[in-house]
Length: 298
Image (tube, rainbow, N blue to C red; front, side, top):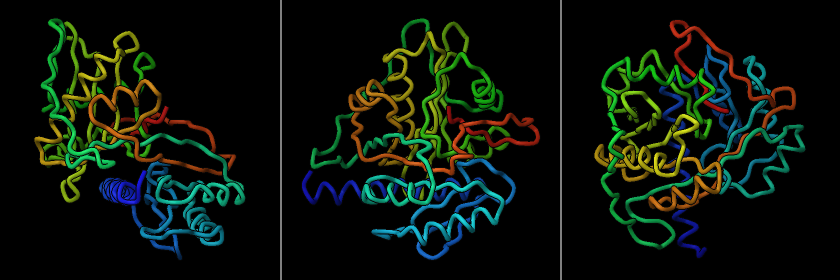
């Protein structure tokens, strides 16, 4: 990759970073600068997605001393020690710095991006084809609360496979407001009037970004064709809203190959390190009326 492509990729990663900051702020997370790191924390919700330390924007390197200061601040807020950052914005040696602080790798998910302007000097991607479902399948853009609450069902149902970066939570209780404001796009996939799949995009129009927050399909329905159908429909909806950058996870090589067929390119990874005692991906079920913010990390 030449210097211009590297610079282009870093600009995309900065846009992704800004998108997540805005998304987390939208959930009520607060943002504090502590030395050379930013501490993101939610005053009432302990979800890991909303409570973490990350290197401050536009810093090329952050030493362990400054990371520790951020972790100490997070612990003082009664939050688990956790660092989240985008690999590609910081050198590989940064991971060693975190291990030297006693943190362990909790998750690393490849990031892929689709840009209308093109990436890696490849020029603009080909136009997205209009999705054509099989005769027994239909797509539905969600416009009511009943459809949105399918996510609550999916979250608790082990029969669905969920693809997610695990860095932007999912909401149920306030979804209609977010949908009306154009901040979220939900598309359902029905087979014989039974919901077999759903996809959500988070939209930040100030940055013209869209994020594939999660895609879920019943085990028996998770085929490359069905996954591509949902992704294509969601991407076309985001582009119609005026987004020019869409980013998504690429958890497996099969996922990445499918994404590349739609014009996505590999741009980096989302990395999370946590203290060993916290390095367990547990999700606590809350009553829907009390806690509408869900973590979809599997």
